Amino acid sequence: MKEKEITKEYTRFERARIIGARALQIARGAPIMIKTDLKDPIEIAKLEFEQGATQIDVKRDNKKENRAS
Image (cartoon, rainbow, N blue to C red; front, top):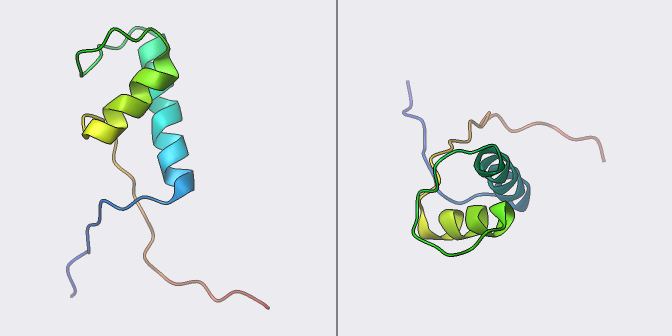
């Protein structure tokens, strides 16, 4: 059995989903993981993501799908 490969490179869609989910958490009162004077939940979530403070995992199916051309 092969070990699962773990990567921290996210697609633009995964990045948007992570930031959006975290911004929603912040807007609903979740604690902010970084020190900042920003008030906008989206900007705070972006900054957390860039600094690696976001604690959200992405599960991927590593099977390559055959796509019809």
